[in-house]
Length: 129
Image (cartoon, rainbow, N blue to C red):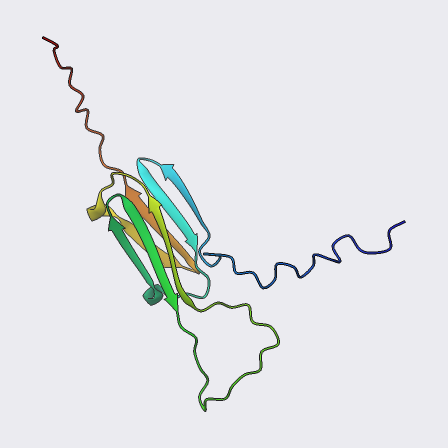
């Protein structure tokens, strides 16, 4: 008979380990000739977010600065889980129309629609002599 709870030894094992990009979880899917990126960004404002494209990559950057209270009082934290700093995620999507990308931010969710470029059939058969 085991009297110890099953998760007793591992309860807090990973509590202090940082999870890279944990503040920027997302889904990417393709629909109606467009790529759709939906990214959870709780605690950010629209002004904190920057969207860039380079060589087939879509990069989403966000920065959150710690707000210090007036009077400069130091807080003695018992537990601190909210993160501050700079975050970045990049996704390779290949050829897309950079001029028609749309982005919106509402209720902590960034939605980006990236139109795919029209596929040109540039296939050419070369005659062998």
